Image (cartoon, rainbow, N blue to C red):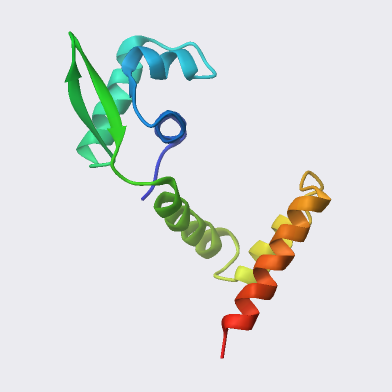
Length: 121
């Protein structure tokens, strides 16, 4: 699933909040954009079957229909193929070289790798 930047920002808000009205999404956005722009993004996401809506008074409440993990898996696969020429190792090297990742997070990643290696035959 591919999300342009604005749609990804809207989806991130819905994933974090669980559901939201257009006004609530708009209030959470980093940039101040028109109500109709947010509504348009939500309608596009609904056409892509990534969100659904339910009536709530005179407005609608929007709910994500795909979870962040599934979307992330798809996005990482595209990044691995398009930027790192299909190499998970090169993508991983880029990730762990990021100085913003702290010691504790690196150690958790190391444990995940060790656990995965133990499960492999």
